Image (cartoon, rainbow, N blue to C red; front, side, top):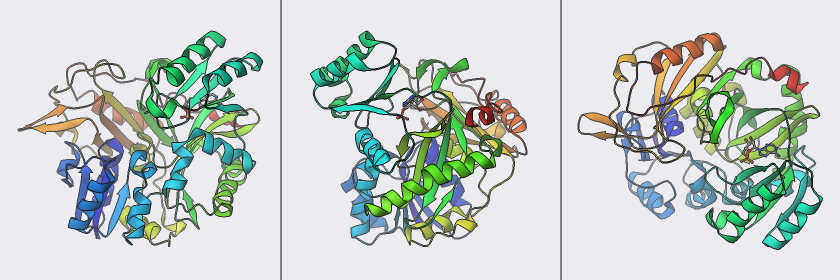
Length: 429
Ligand code: AMP
């Protein structure tokens, strides 16, 4: 099997690493890839959002399967374009990707199908209507820019002044680009968050192991939001009773809603959940694997990912094939100094080779590139040090021990990944 993977972050490195382990796989291309992926696949300089460039690449290299990592090509319709040519692809249609590409589309979908979610105050495309709505809401209030905004489109407004300022920035000054032209106002939910991701071929689905990510930059959930500073997976995150509730009140109604509306979906569907006192509710959908959740999930896979993804593309998913290592996994992200604000790239990374042979530890690379014989930083999130073990405690210990051996100027990482384990059961009751 020859496989094309689209994307160039830690998630894609994890996917490539796992796909390469399959005896069926003889070749992997990655577009655009990164310094670490280049060791496991042939990187091709085509950006993930460049649909015509990717079509040209697939025409030339004729992969048997294409696997899409990030949301942008999906929202831009890559799955439709490849499917029209009968090219096997794992990734939802443009219509289905609207579940992530438009917060208003996804909220209306949730409401139409009675799936538990935060109450909507309203959706607005004129700022004066949004300002007027602020007169009769409870605080804090959640404001969401409708379109893709690289993780900057959600604001928890403590009061009307802060809400007005945010609305002005996104709707009048267009600081987030076209994604901020329309906004959604909704109730604030309280509880612990949980990422529940399923793999589907449109007919059947298989849940992946549960994960939780850490979005804030610093320990104790302080500092600005980031793309994700770490994640962990453990079966304890999702007790059986909670899992049953999530499946019956959220997952099943979502798939029957997609079927009723004839929206085809092949790929990963990510349910961002808030475990509230009233039960689990949907915060958001993503039309792909999370990053760094993917790294923690891949570390626990005990099946042939290439075979299962080929089944998905062919509409023949067999959920029983997805077997998982018992225990837990953790991914600690090592970031550039200053990230998620301004940071300098080109810093030399040392120490990775010393942990290559450690059992249970894998360093997935994100913002890296090769410069001669050296590996240097090229982005905000640089590496995801990932470990799996029989318990979360040991997985975390292994990941942190490995992280200590790595160095680049300005490197920072959170020391409390996975620190919340055990509190979830109470929140989900
Ligand atoms: P989203 O992209 O919609 O998931 O929002 C990003 C983050 O904002 C989520 O992971 C939550 O931490 C937070 N968030 C979104 N919606 C709500 C809500 N209704 N109540 C509380 N927090 C929220």
